[in-house]
Image 1 (cartoon, helix red, strand yellow):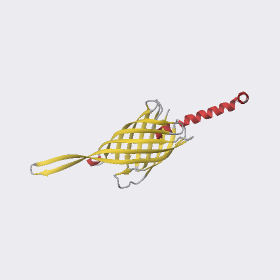
Image 2: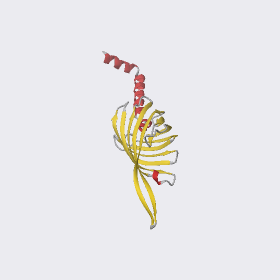
Image 3: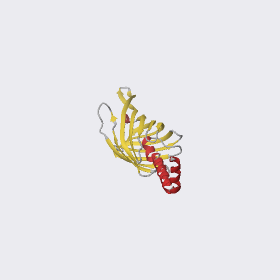
Image 4: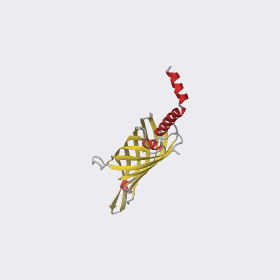
Length: 220
C-alpha cells in the first residue's frame, strides 16, 4: 500500500521528486568539496586544492593533489612574520572517511631557514600531524595536532696560537602544534578558513597564540 502511494506521488508530481534528488546530490557534493578536502588534508583521486592563509604570526601556502582513494601528496610553505621559512613536501593518508567525520595523518620533510646570518636557526625539519574534521552542510569544524622536529647546527670557532679551528655540533629543537577552526564552503570549489593556532615553541616557555584567515580553492 505504501509503495503504491509512493509511486502515485512520483507520477503526480515528478518535478518535486527531481528537486529532492538534485538537492540531495548537491549536499553530497558539498561534503566532498575542495575547502573540506583542504582542512582535512586529503583530496579525492586526481583532485587538487590550494590554501593561502594569512595571519599573525604564521602564514602558509599549501597545494595538494589526490594520488589514490586515500593518499594525497602535498607541498607547504609556511613562515613566521616573513622572517623564518619552512618549505616542505609530505604525504597524507586518510584513516576515517565518513560523510560527517574525517580523520587523517600526514608526514612532512622540509628545511627551516631564517633571513639572517644566524646559522643556529637553520636545519632539516620533519613533522607528524593528525587532522580531524566534521563536515556538516556548508561548514566543517576541524582540529589539527602536530609535532615538529628540527636539527639545528651550531658552529664554534676556537682561536689558538697555531690558528683558528672550527667545531660543529647538532642540537634538536621541538615545536608542538595545535590548531582549531572552521571551514566554510561558499561553493564546491571556493571556501574560507577561520582558525586559532596554538604553537608551543621552545618549551617550557608558553608561546603566544596566533590567528589566521585562509582562502581555499580547488577541484575544477
